[in-house]
Image (tube, rainbow, N blue to C red; front, side, top):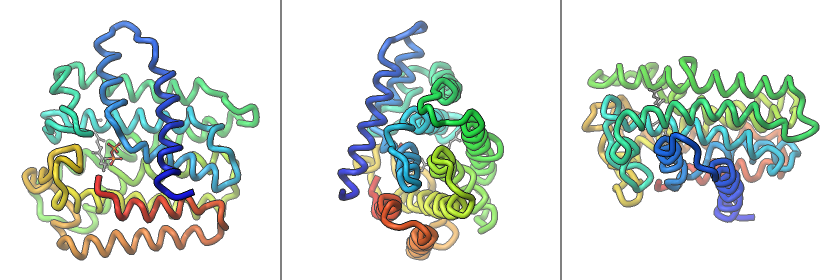
Length: 295
Ligand code: GRG
């Protein structure tokens, strides 16, 4: 299957689970609406898709782990809502629509983010979906997601990102920011699929290398798109990194060297999958797709 059809098919699996999970509005309705507004604003669903593709690479049927994979999208969506707040990146546009706080106000946007983060863990723990899933594996993936999302991962990276505005870029700080802010949750997504498939350590290590590589490349490409993209393609305001004097790869070494770095990371990530045969082809294709993405 070509990569576009694969991504569409898997996105539909995630979307239909989300639709059914959030189908019955509950009190307080405005909070529910604010959560749904950002969840259904048209995200690529790349993190849950990576979990499904990784599970498939380890011999599983992606349909069996949809609830666990979908929880990753709740965490990602919360991070975008909070990232857009006036006290953070102060953005007006996200996924082609006004940001959550522009529509629902700042307080409700903060709460929608908080509620999505917490709901992710309810979604994870609610679903002893597959009879073959061991409780110990469920605890392992909850631990993975917790580590990747909080102070040891995404939130830690975001804190240093904000702290490093207006500071001369240096490679170590920049890699810390990108590896924590972005690559940690992407790596956890890939590892989730592998852990749920009960894969052996050697293959888990290879998938971890793959996840870290594409995760870092993903953020470098995001840095480049912030310079070269436009609001229509990106669905968000371009040029905000320069305006906010963010520490980015292009600020460190220019756009062309950044592009080469992203290419090298993607190529190394694909190499790390050499112990897998054709069952990891979709992961290989996703890596190539991420390099070419325009949004
Ligand atoms: C805890 C107060 C508080 C805030 C958390 C951690 C955080 C705020 C924000 C980090 C989120 C962020 C902007 C990470 C950068 C990663 C990135 C490139 C996001 C865009 O991801 P895509 O391209 O977006 O997958 P779509 O819209 O397709 O889902």
